[in-house]
Image 1 (cartoon, rainbow over the protein chains, first blue to last red):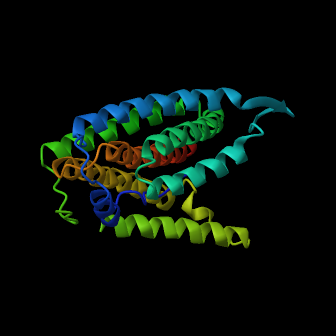
Image 2: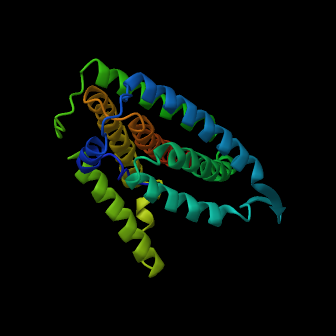
Amino acid sequence: MALENPALNERSFQRGMEEAGAGPRTMSASGTYAITGLLFVIVVAAAAFGFSQVEIVTVDGRQEALTPAWTWLVFLLTFIVGIVGAFAYRAAPITSVLYALGEGSLLGIASRYYDLRFEGIVPQALLATLCVFLAVYLLYNLRIVKVTSRRWL
Amino acid sequence: LVVAATGAFVLLYVVAWLLSLLGVDLRFLYAPTPLGIGISFLIVILGALNLTLDFDFIEKAAEAGAPRYMQWYATFGLMLSLIWIYVYVLRLIALLRSRE
């Protein structure tokens, strides 16, 4: 699981700018959020798949979850894609989709484990995550929180 | 500061993982104690602070006329932060509920 965010830093940004070249089409914030929505759907779909692939068996009257056989392969591949994705800017349309598929299915598997022990935890966590996202988005856009620790420009 | 704090936590987990491979008991990090819950809560807050950096990146990069594919790259970063938050919210709720 990716526990860090090595992708967005000052150096990346400068390199991104240098690679910008003379392309007439440039990035927009609304386009970025549209893609975010798309990737969110991919992650959720992959997570639903991962969730469904976990087998629940009863051992000695206790329910145990069995990880699908491909979990570790996907874990490894997702890790590699994540590292590559953090450095290969131009490949981002490909790496981010691959990462969303891989990480999504892993999240689904992990969620199934949590759900087995704590029923209904997944919707709670999803809702909480969404609330955090919206709250931070509002705080940022209303300029209540100012990002002053780093200046790119 | 947020970047440094994030790095510190990642380092903490890597060290904790390595120590656990050596058989050192570090379960206090994940235990449903006030300390464990406090740490999990801090990590969620840290994830939220990372989100502000992502929003800032998106805004600045768009203003500066970054190339089109940087949209995907910025989304990738945003996705990482969101997944971070989800994972630790899961853990936090699990800790809170196992206290009941």
